[in-house]
Amino acid sequence: MNFQKNKDAIFSAVAKAAEKAGRPSESVKVIAVTKYVDSSIANQLVNTGITHIGENRVDQFLEKYNALADKQLTWHLIGTLQRKKVKDIIPFVDYFHALDSVKLAQEIDKRATKI
Image (cartoon, rainbow, N blue to C red; front, side, top):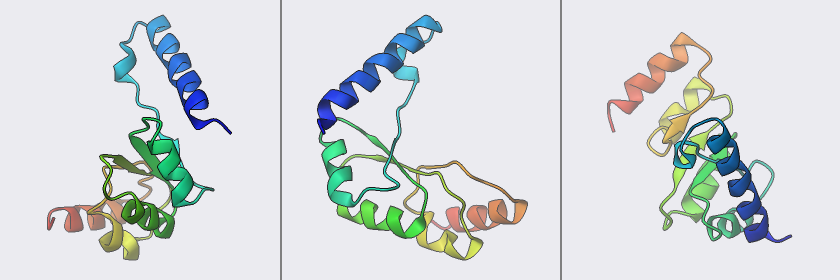
């Protein structure tokens, strides 16, 4: 699999779609979701120029975050989050995409203000 070729094709298609919609291409962010791959594959994606990484499980998120700590990345948690795991992950997440309860929002707010 040629990650660079695939990444370039996806970014080109996104840029064309943004242009067609009258938006600057840089206003659209492509998130590489690494749900089913290990950190070595994620690293290969980052080496193509990917800067946004998404993961849906806390344990996998933390493993990849630590493995890629030397990279300048924007991290997305796209899966559900249990309140008891907020303390483990909230310092590392740039974007959280699955807020599903007021109690979870309160726990995130409580933990995020202590960072």
